Amino acid sequence: MTNTIRLGGLLLAALLTGAATTAAAQETWYPSKYGANDLRGALNNLSPEGVKRAVSLVKTGKTYALGVPTGPDSPAYGDRAYRIEILQTPPAGDPPQGDNKVTAHDEKVTTSMGIGTQLDGFGHLGIDHRYYNGLKGADLRTPKGLAKLDLSGLPPIVTRGILLDMAKYQGKAMLEGGHVIKRADIEAVLKARNLTIGKGDVVIFHTGWLKTADTDKAKFLATEPGIGEDTAHWLADQGVVAIGADTVALEHIPFADPKREWIVHQTLLAKRGVHILENINTAELAADGVGEFLFVLGAPRFVGTVQVVINPIAIR
Image 1 (cartoon, rainbow, N blue to C red):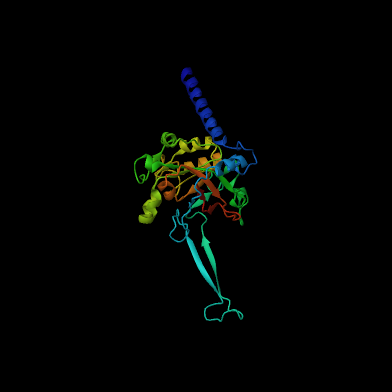
Image 2: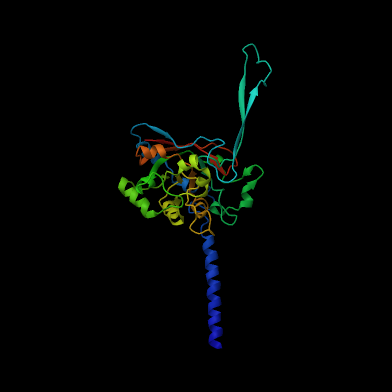
């Protein structure tokens, strides 16, 4: 009886210790290594020296628009939608203004900022109502948008971009939905191209999956190739500032664990402070065999936003 009680006590103590350890582990992702008050995350790895190194990659001057057109048919997750209304001045039937007969058009756009080619901010995906650097969701949300972590303060991102053609590596025009891009695959592509991932880089995956948005939008949104949690951590360890792909969500779907959805988003945005780029138009870069390039992004400065529509530029 005594041994049973002692064993039971030890088991209970172990369980309590394990629970405490688990709870403690959940807290270790904040404060950020960049400082308890930091809001920039891995963007702290950008530097003037990095800009100059990236500019030196430009050899041909050819430019690539990495954004897809944003409109009613743009790839969008869930019920996000784009609507536009054209306003005519003067109204139809009224005469033009003045002796020089002025007429004009204006527009009114109602849209989610998370549509088409987009950048996910740190206020997008959190963990138990905490976001990057442990900020509480209740302290972020205001009637005018996010009070912190919004994208109006995003600095210009001018740095080295790396394209990893994972479809070519697999000998395919397009990876299948659910295909998991592993660290070993990435390292193999880097070795084949004689490239390394460095501090301040933007890493973009070409999977060929974006073509599916034109042929089967339901399939495009329901499944996709992508990276998993371990690979996300490894890439963040390299000091990259953003990771993107020609998919709607970057991470592989179906998820590795259906009870842990969007774990890559949580890992990169909340824990590691690395921005996510989605629906990147990588086809032309891949067709030209581009491995590294000058990456340029001046994101629109919409106050309070969680995500933002972008059109990054690659120059080689």
